[in-house]
Length: 510
Image (cartoon, rainbow, N blue to C red; front, top):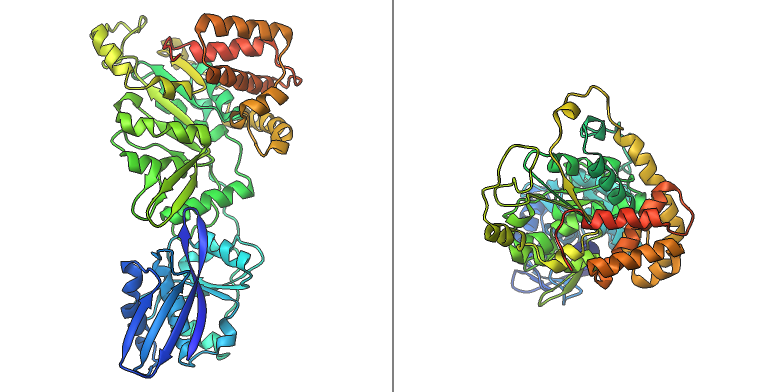
């Protein structure tokens, strides 16, 4: 007999519905799986047969052929165990075929017939809904991940025999419902705890408001890492669409907490400087998302920037420009999103104390050592970073001050208002923040006053700016104007601050 069930796998950050076609016929006993299964899927025949037997179901010894369609795409999800088992039982007549025509199944099976959670459930369930399937059967550990998808009924399974009895009408399964929302955690890292560093906090607020990349350079202990870790606390809260995108990525990467639902906080990724190029950008024989994708809609923080290998840093150039990463392999070409804010921190020299006039420490590095150290960051990469600032040593009086600084919630309020202005302006172009504008959009929505135009021309000539730097200065100025609630024309004071934020560290990138 022939039967068909539906399972799924992932491609990039999207789900792909797999039709599991099962044929059982008289002949020498055999169990073959075709359709480009990887090792984990090929081994599923042993898990499936043993799980069915240990669930108290006896099957005839026949020749069984299972095809995973579409056949030209490699299948690598152990979640195909359950749809293979259901398709096999339907082919043998143990469950009625009509009961599985509009159902999606995804779970790994233990040898005892228990259903185990798998990675990538959210994008698979979204794909199942788009295909017109109406019910989903998943392991209990994947319930909260599948429930955010609207328009589809989710059933939770602990064992294989539960779904068999349900499909035969012998036992009722109650559709899963979302659990009560947990109370939002209190932010641990707050700008209210930061003493001094007013320019750095201003630069971070601008970066958060416009989605701009930022480089901080300063002596050890000046607070670069501490400031960067607080950026997430002032970013706008995730919209539902953004939360779904982030959750899909983390689901595929296997980084969702056990039983976790939608990701509610923006990602903050801080890879070590020994991170490889593939780990940063993504890849593998079956491409998986890298750090730039895991930071999508959030922050990628690179501490001790010159300590990263040059190859690892150079692969960031294309994601920063295109906000996406395309990885080509023999079997597929996949695109991963990478719309993130890049925050970098570095010392001014190998010893860290070059230019530290107030600290009493003398730099021991030679000019050639300093040049060798700073040249690890290429000009094209620096050119893609909108804001460059120095982070000075904090004075003793500021450290001992009892006056509490401005809180993250207050700053976030201004950032969200600025983002709303940008969204209203850029929505017709499919953008949501100033950093995403290209040159064409910038010319249409970022008019400058005559005074601002003259100031920018003077800066362009004196600093020998590139065309990319010209655009990025205007983008930062537009964000500063949005924070000020200024009208559509960008004023000279906004251009002046944007130019200062790009040239303050004293490193020429042009």
